Length: 156
Length: 177
Image (cartoon, rainbow over all chains, first blue to last red; front, side, top):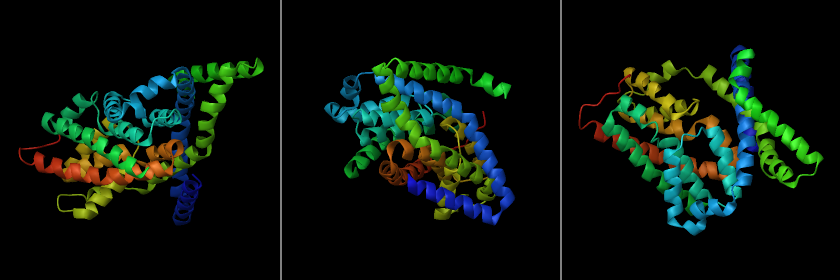
């Protein structure tokens, strides 16, 4: 966390030295984006806090915990494929799931499919890439996500 | 300002009700309310409060410095590894959901980007864009984020190469619906 902040501050400084005006414009743009999204972030954090407090841990762990074994990966991949949750909601949720005892590899599968596989957005995708390539892309990433999860698990 | 409030009316309603609920919980010593605040809400807010504004400033700076038109010239069919690196860097600086990336791929296609680079763009856009990574690091930690990124990038490149190969078997184009 500290490292991230230091890197960010160094980049801002470099940008400022190279071009003051551009930097000020960028900072303004960024802060406006931040303020626009802030109410959504805070309210989502609040809702997720309440929901996770209400859902018993056992239910979550039955499907996504170690007890479910290999199936937990498949459940996570399916959940990620059918959901349409923006990142700023998915991450607090994932963080809380980890606190509840869900393992990091399972979270990696969920996050990857959530971002890469879109069952609900497939009709939109087909309009751009056609049926063949869209379905292929989603299938490849569905299985790819599970492998990525397993690999993360080997090192975590 | 008025428009901002109207657009966020649900969010503000949630924020106000939650705040009232927490204040009441603390004043009457309602344990469940206190747990929701301490164990869940506050522990996450604390992590994000400093990180988020700085990350959004970085996104703004990326927006100002990165000239998409300049990048577009270097990601064509014969762009090789340099094209792959450029397209990954470009996608990392973007914001928005998956379906927001499709129109961009059409633009890239029109400008002559290779099929491979277009699918790398989609992949990298989805999984390693900086705004998302900041959330990921904040909530799940460096170790997780780096590992996931490290394993995702080779998969994105591999899958994109495979898609390019298969797409070329038949006439392929990206349409603008």
